Length: 278
Image (cartoon, rainbow, N blue to C red; front, top):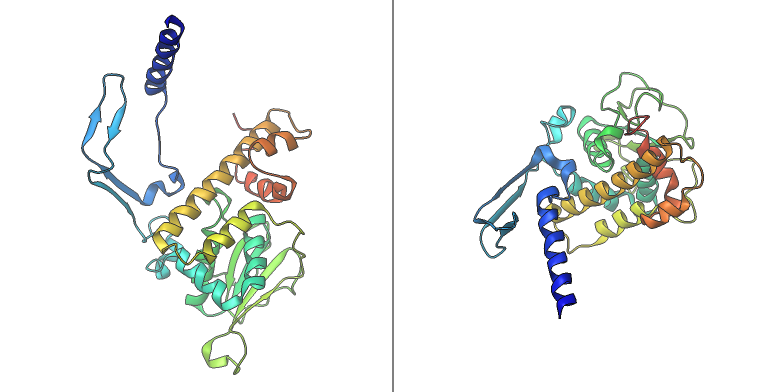
């Protein structure tokens, strides 16, 4: 009886200590600037916790206007990135969209050539899939720019671009007035080869976009949570390397839910982090 009482007291102490030192945050902090929430009817407990009754009003609003964060996309800010991605997948088909998705997430330069609005929409949707720190976007370049300078680039159809290669995934969009009957308006040109086992995030995003039960707002929150999950994994792996643990990190990656097939994505996302993490 006494041991049960001591265990109970120990658990109470752990919970109260947690209330003093830990703060719960929304799993979408990548969207801090556009997240507007108002939690009412909060109850402060004696142990320092804040309780929110889910049956009472909880107002959580995700704004679709991201022009404040990315002013270069102000012309298409009225359209959600998730809607653009769904539409792009429907136009391209599963195989070509997969090439574009894989390239976007693993650091292959995305080159979009075509009419202004369609070009902006594609760059807007695809660049939203990676952390802001990893985005180097040029929406209307007067000439082609090297992948080291930008990983998302848009050019007019009159601009000379390199031939398809493994380091550049090109999306050509044909204007309606130039479109040939029964031909596709969107064509992906990339000579790279997809790995036999795709990165976990690629597979999860594909499944999310295929799920017709997910509305745009729900899908947006889900993709943001996935992005944060893998950004955090990249941060942990990057931090371990920065502290001199540059050897085999497969055990650490496995414990974090990542495998060898995720290494290229994690390495790419690590480039947006400080060289010597604390």
